[in-house]
Image (tube, rainbow, N blue to C red; front, side):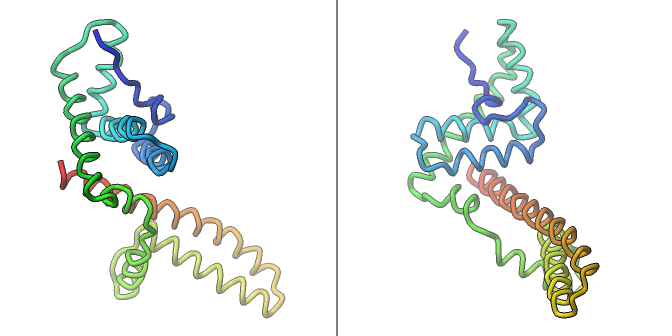
Length: 187
């Protein structure tokens, strides 16, 4: 029985990590400049294998591998995801921004469109809500500084912190969705 990669260890996440935690770990590791192709390949394989639809099969394979009794059907699902990672890496050699672009770029256009849509009457997600909270907090800070209102300033600080959290969470979710769409399109 061959060696099975432990993708939880490769991505440095616990086995009960959420899909979002797996994405943030993947992004942090994949964007490092000091990676060779082999490490980048293992990190991408880990991300793809630990996606919702194949993660349960991988967990079964990992347990079965420790017991030295693998179910070939489950292993083939894991191997298919690993093969997808190799295909994506091959495509990335011809289009370097294929995966790196959505992971690096800030979705400023998405934020602006979302806020505009909200003003018109659309729904508001994490990026827009966070941006709105940041805007409100900034206005409150300027108001409190111009009128020397300490209570307004004290109220603005938690709103600012919440806005930063919501906005950053929304940005990472947006990047995750874009990356997952690229993966689905190219595999």
